Length: 156
Image (cartoon, rainbow, N blue to C red; front, top):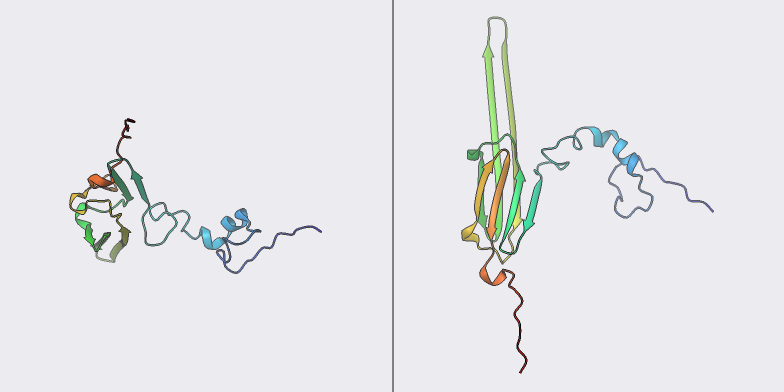
């Protein structure tokens, strides 16, 4: 008996995780995938959400969110019920009138992300900055959550 690959052509994500016969090359050759989701570096292949990096150290967390093309004033960052909510919206309109024609262009982009904060984070100490298209956060940990050096126990 031999195994034969099964190629389902209807929906590219159908049973993706559970299939033992998933063909990765066929998936990325699918025209649905090539329509732009894979090639859009800002959205990292997901609609509506910019890419995000989270790093943890002994004393704090660092969050970096890729959001090029926005200005500092375009962001709205709030802490609500243990969530860090990040949203941004930008709209640009341009109009040029000549004798024989009128050219109008506009663009609009927006996103929203919510991150559940660990209980170990001091919400009142969260700092944010925006530079070169990266929105960065530094979330300090509470003293009891910080990693402590091992303590030597004396034996009597």
